[in-house]
Image 1 (tube, helix red, strand yellow):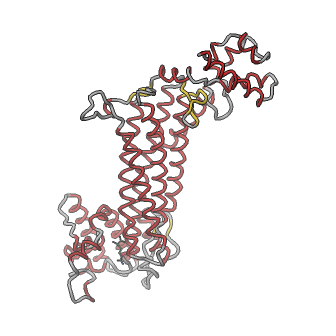
Image 2: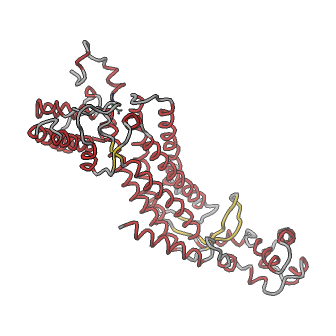
Length: 460
Ligand code: ARG
């Protein structure tokens, strides 16, 4: 019989069990469920709601169940509906009557809220660690390739030369904000819900703060209705994972482009790329493509939970059982993605020469020619027009800007002097961009140093 079977005269239909049950996916919260129950039983005993001897039996039984699950002996049966009832049923089998007292002053509604918060706290911390490692990978890659110059793009058209490390550090900034978001959202996860009961609290003289302290929560939730119906924290984590995934997907896309024969800016390590079953010459950036692709499913999980919640009246509704599969999937996906993405990144070879080819053929220093004239007093708009004409001249005569003679320059404007070629050399174009946050070497070195000292502190 079901634990809630008292008011029923008939067994539930088989198909209902399959439809209604969540044990197949909520079983991963077994440890949280057991630890939450132990804390609850201690509180019940401290408050004289159950006897000390009963608490000891309950705790012993729960710890035995923990061993059974970890030893692979525990039977997860769909008939038990969810992890909460499966564990409670087994507890009653092991310790008898005392086991039946565990659910006093508690409901599955506040119990599931506790389990999921505990589970997400654990996983959010793991993701934080992995994200920290990706940040380290980016800084390491930036540091290793400090002098490398690449074309910087807007509209995916060559725009201005930049340092490759500047490009890496741009991603560092994005993922660093994601790390901040994770840390901030943790505060909202870290609030203890047990004691809200089914929806309205309880008539027992419970001590919620004791349970919170036992389980390492700094505070307890303030409104019982909110407590059992709130899933904001799941949406928030889903969103942060979506953001991380979106950021990874952007860099993945760049790596896919960079590793084409057309670009050849980078070569992926053999260990992190795959071959084609038909075309022997191919080396495919599958990891980067999968990272980009998995983003779709992660966004889907975010939309899923937002949609589940949008029409729900207070307080608990069974709809919220649908909160788990999406976030579990997002968590699993982002964890493996972060690990493999970092490995792919740090083992990737940078083809400095090919980046230079891109730079030399792109009139990429045209802005600097205009700036040259503007610094000599010509209005920038006017300078811009002149350089536009210069570029057309170069195209017609198949020359680079740096290959023009002073005479040719002077043909367009008299302000050109013989320092022009030095002033528009690629190194000068990059290193001259000393403005705070710009691509000049000094600025990038500052970014790298700041990042290194942050990461050192973050590790502690
Ligand atoms: N399996 C349920 C869930 O995940 C647990 C809470 C069920 N509560 C209830 N009153 N049916 O949401």
